[in-house]
Length: 175
Image (cartoon, rainbow, N blue to C red; front, side):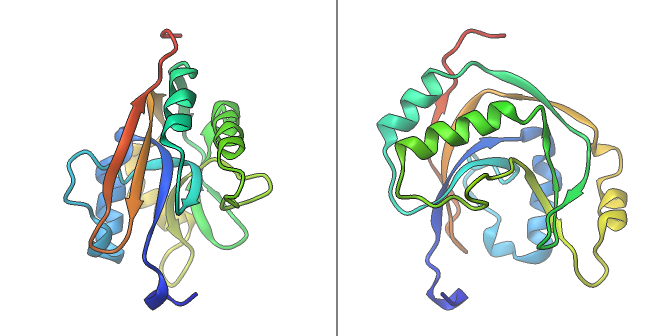
């Protein structure tokens, strides 16, 4: 599918508000059309399941209600074989469990990174003038960062139309 044929998709995600300003600035650097005007939309996120063309909102709500808030850290910069520079959450097990449960509820979705998606926050992509070193410099003191996952968000990604569709707080008792 060409970029001209792409009309967006939904993403089930966990927001990372601690890095929102950094991710918004980097998104604006590449394509301001993906900077949302929706104040509820979180650009900085860790994907739980994508791409979604349809979804079961009740299943998403049940998953969130059954999940306890949890803490994680973002501190180690890594690179996927395709050049995607990212921050893997540590520990990553709670994110893997969310993805597995969301995938069971949406079995027709082939998640990015299938069959075993690696949870991560995308930072950039290796290219001219961009590598791990330059990304580390741009991040400055933004990492390491301690984070807390508190809910699921269903968002729409499309140039000129990024917005929050729905969100569900985690319902488990605080850890």
